[in-house]
Image (cartoon, rainbow, N blue to C red):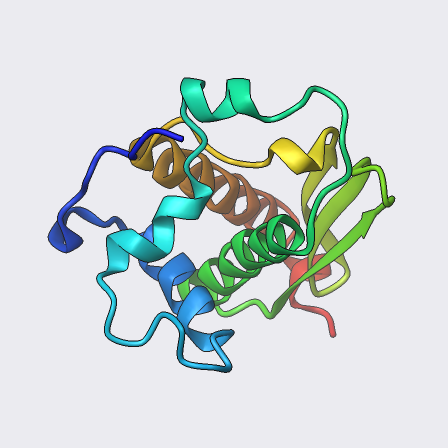
Length: 154
């Protein structure tokens, strides 16, 4: 497995900061305590070499499922912080790694992603991680702006 390109903690964007918070919050045994932020994001990076090492067909392991959950929790929390709408992620994945993840704001589905090959979940780079997370948040904020009555109803 190749080493991911290093990033300085100062280079971490707003979405990645939220994701780092999720990883640290779910660290019940203090494994990540005192480690740099970039180390917490490294498992989310699946560059070409690492992707080649992952079989085409496989079942997601518990660590991968946890990363998927952390990523979409960060999306939901980013939405909440930016517009005040309480957002909740819901994931339904089969043991083979197929399914759907939605983020619900009020009564409105603000993110809907089909998952295939969840065992290969990851991003090509730190920049791609930030860009994809921010894109989901921005799309959700646009949906909330378009349908505010559904989003604000609880």
